[in-house]
Length: 357
Ligand SMILES: [Zn+2]
Image (cartoon, rainbow, N blue to C red; front, side, top):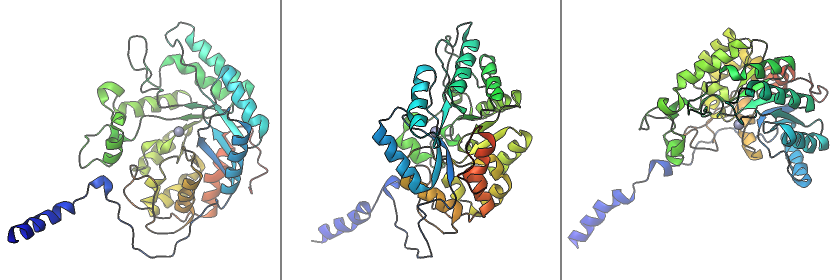
């Protein structure tokens, strides 16, 4: 008897142990709060990925979901090039000419061929003639893309110089994903803010040897932006400076052609509501609204972080943030810049009529 109760006592704390990744306390806080399912002003999502050749019924459903969110226009960054690019334009803009904006992608075939620089620039030129309104560069560009010898090709490599001059010619912005969150390079230990993400996706760990250091990738992209002052660059995901907005502000001041979006990094803003409010109030004419992964209900968190003054509410993806969100309570002028004015300024040929000005 005695022995058994002693064992039970010993076992109790053990069975009470839980893993960090399972710990998910439900907040008991009761404060005024309100879900926002529709943005206060019509918005443009500058950072979205869609299969541009989806069937008509799916496209119709997409537009209905956009309407419910008050999303007036969506940029599909998977615009491809050549025949496939034209198929995307025809399918999406053919059906809804005012709702979808298509950003083209680059052709990375035979990058070592002597005629590559000209061919890739000509292909992009044709994409713009076909109706693409910007260029999207995925994270392979400058990080994992390699030449024949296996050497990483930096973002400011000369073979792509003409590509960015073609963008300047058409005033087409370049939405570019540079590097990854810095913690992916840092030791995977108890101090790493993305520990959980790296546990769930070990393949996301990066090393300076394999991928270039985070600092190198940032410097290379900075050289790229400076080499093409007439080309506007939207450095995606707050340029992975969401945890250091002051630095990002300094970079934007040094480079007038540098813009950014808030796609996939709303949790960075939601953990610093007062400073993020000040920062966005100052820089919203350089910042664009975007979400990245298409999941309509997740937009509610974006609207709530930007518009409300709610406190300590849930974010939907724990591997990005184990912390809660706070509303920034942005003023109308700042919201309008974020939601559509900055996009109208730098994406050519958009219809201004649906927006309140
Ligand atoms: Zn993306």
